[in-house]
Length: 243
Image (cartoon, rainbow, N blue to C red):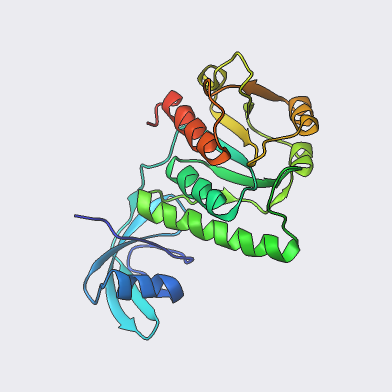
């Protein structure tokens, strides 16, 4: 039986009545074709799932009654922050979706010298809302009850200047003699930096190393940005025992 999960921006507790609106309500009624009495699972990012029943359906809204609370078990023991060079729309969307499915704790989009996509303040705000929507949808699909934090896009220089709590800061570099798995072994927090389509330039790589990043390699081939991010996250989670 497929579990239907819906993210809501509301406090949840057994017995509460929650209104689902806009796109989420349309998905429940028009796409999933659910009606009064049907079961759904709600989550709001607090780490728990909330079984519920649809109590009423209105024009553009769905009311659900929460019937319980269960602790979700889909989180990784490794807290990974993906620092992703902003890529073209479809590639960036793919990275956001798969990174969420692979259990990242946070995603930091960064603008680099070779980023094809350039965002002003308004464009950055629109992209941020779009990216967060992708992360939420991925959580609904994969069973996560904590939505990874998707930060506002900043330049790589600003990110590098900010403090970090990561035990390891890792930069993918094909020329490195050390594997990603070896560098990540034993860490409980990792910050992974992946460049955009054109990679990082020499100055950005030097700045990253000065900020404490270590070079590591995935294998003998040079991968596309989106492939590298997904493959690296899979390796990190495997090392942590999450896959």
